[in-house]
Length: 356
Image 1 (tube, one colour):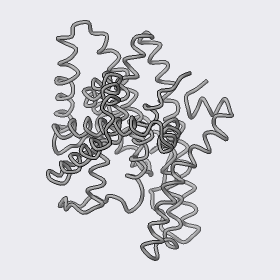
Image 2 (cartoon, rainbow, N blue to C red):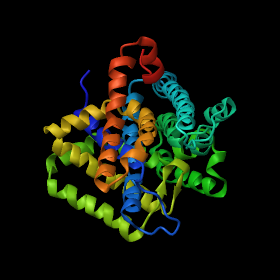
Image 3 (cartoon, rainbow, N blue to C red):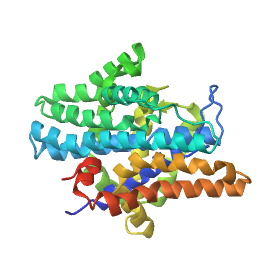
């Protein structure tokens, strides 16, 4: 099967940004929103990294809509997303249980709450960031359920023949409704992050134009424009301080939420177009082919690397070196585990990658 190399690079850049955002000592948000380097970096990353995948989902759904029935599409997406999601949640819960035992053995206070079967069950039933966090770990698995749901919802809406109804539903009515409902209620009341699935529909609509946008940027292919777009992106963050956390459907500005997501996707895609034939492009393309296991396993590596913090955080240079090593391992280890173990076992391949 011929892969879209530029698409892999875009995904590689986006998942790298997500891993950076989850590294320790990066981006602790202050209540008064004082803009230091860490906070600015966190705001910058959160304004686009996960949104890139929702935008790209629009292209995936559009192509699938042209080939599959709704039932077949749901079956394929369920195998590809929901089964690996459940498998990775259970694997992560097991890793936290072991992590807590090691912490006690080393005389440290466990970082995470005690994981119980009841909390795991409630987390899987609700499958949103608050319940996943209460499970005892880190709620980053929130992404999978709304990603699955938005695929199905978008597929259904594409079947609406009347464009005069379909476009307003995608771009205005449904996103505005669920932004309002989330504001009125609490995010934890929405099972499987279904509110997020409706909020990202405009981004998915942008994704249906992926091929057109890519061809346009291939004609431009200007390095300087990338720097200008990043500078504009950062300027908005620094000047207006838009705080965006899609995990709980919170944003201080709906306009900034969509504008920054699309701007971020645009310069990431332009960067991918520019490096597609360079060695750096090879690196990001490789990373992009393993976004699922990297996203699902990188926090396990980061958690266990935390045991070295008492030894690594002596000087600034050693601390920074430890952070870089943790970052590299957070990407490399999931790829190695996937290639050497998961892909070579049919059962594991199905459970963790959704492939037969």
